[in-house]
Length: 202
Image (cartoon, rainbow, N blue to C red; front, side, top):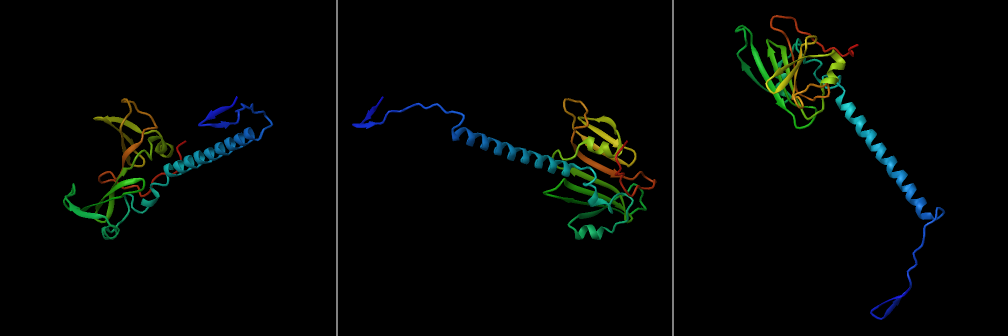
């Protein structure tokens, strides 16, 4: 049936039916397969990147020589941009310094160190986002002790001396909870562990 618009006759419109042999469905199927493949590649790459960032052995590698028990000259920290100040130690005959630095990128948003007489006694790390979970550390050091601290939960491992803080979801603890901060420390008047256990718990 012809239509006339402003005196111009238009050719009749025929409603064709696409058959399986026509090129259009073949192109559509090909494009759909290509898009699906690309989406799968993006998802796999994203997961691989996340798992790589979340590998619990890697975050502490940068602190291998700055864990509690290691000797450290705070002038090195100052040269790296840390701010340091003297502090009153629990025992007056110790010379204690507190050094800290904030970071705009990376896993840790703030690094804080306590140094007594040139020996690191405590390392505190504020963790950015949800990049490190309790479960990832449990793979290294086993199941932690968990106890409530106000609205937060503290998780701790006695060997090595590590304590972390998490905010529970609906008041419940799971190994998928992200750590907001972690502290690696020496017990007072006790020898300090100079390395973290990196073998996975059995």
